[in-house]
Image 1: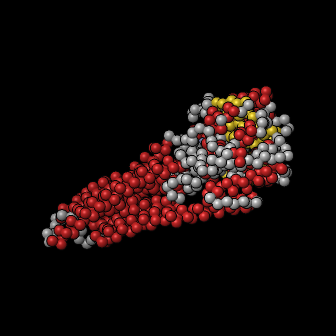
Image 2: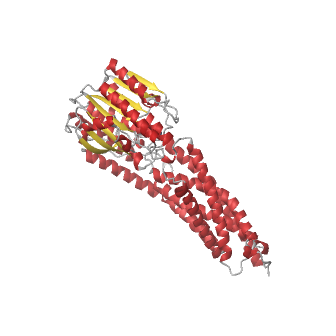
Image 3: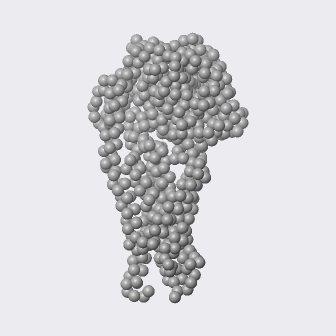
Length: 567
Ligand SMILES: [Zn+2]
């Protein structure tokens, strides 16, 4: 052990361990920074699409029939619960049932905004419930007020904040009810009372009413609970009361949820019960039947039925299958709006001037602009993926050069990590890569802390497995007591870095596909959720670079096969 060659090998191992430790801790720190940066990019995303004045995109539907429209938003109502509501059933029987697909993230502020504006999150800039102040996009309330219609708004005060609801001719706001496990805070009854009383005096031409209680029950008890079903029944009766009081035979009703709930309660993600909801349109001008549509198509449809301009920043278009006269002047105006909006959209995305003539052309040009810019940006970000792959190759090569046995041991540690971490995530907790995991916003920090703790645990177990595999590969294993302490420490650091390098490749893949910056296009949120979790694990594994070597050293000292004294 004391030849110049072995001294040099030993010294280079010390250098390699020190370098690996530095890389590991740098990855940990960088991942933590990137996680908060990326999260912030989504939360404080500023839409580049709403800068244009509403007036330049609105198309007045000359000669359109003006109708009184009442929009009722039932927050958090699943399709399954909606299909059991008598009041909705009665409306659907004389109108159109709409199978709605909700955009991501399926949180309340973003989806309320989509309902009122026809703009999904990418266009509205409302990506979370932390959005503050009035939305930047044009809404149904805006077009109704500007057209001189008598307007009525009733619901939780959030409606006032987001849409400046107090501008309406009549309005009533309640505080969002406390999340409690009894029904003492039920607000929908009062909201319906207020709406009926206000409408008696006003005879509103456009009304927007929001019911908060079903969502509350979903969060408190889950969508599969008896409590949820009981609140749905109560809301059903109140909805029936509202429709009966406001229906003068000339009124269009649009009743719909913003999103559903998973069975255990929660939304924000992409689960079917969350994003596939059921809405209803009924009244004059509405066809009878059943159609499918995106949530962004609701506002243009309501605008057409009301004889109002489609809100300026709407990307959706009127659901013609739900209209008794799909060739009306109002529909023609909505189509002109759609082509004008597509031109604006393409201008923002690519700087190109296009003049789509038809709805199909409008959709095609927008999709092409998206594809072209994404392809360009991906080409510019390819180095991020290649860099991460290069890191993984460098780590593998460095370990292999030092010892092929160590490489096999590290690989078994990496595999153990992946199995333990993912088994805990998917099997033990039953989580998915979905924002619906946060039933309540206060749970987010605890959720990420929990995943970090589990990453450390899984990483330590990975080091333990690597430390048992390593001596098993030798017929005559060499332990710490024989002067091989550095090797055993190196094994722990190498395992931590090996796990980090495999996670870094997954992070590199997301960065290549979507990037960390959110400037004009929102990432795929399922991939984004995984990306955040990968970064959180990367950050936590810095601790394993410290703990892991202790684990492997102790195994090297205490392993039964290594207890024999040196020969
Ligand atoms: Zn909710």
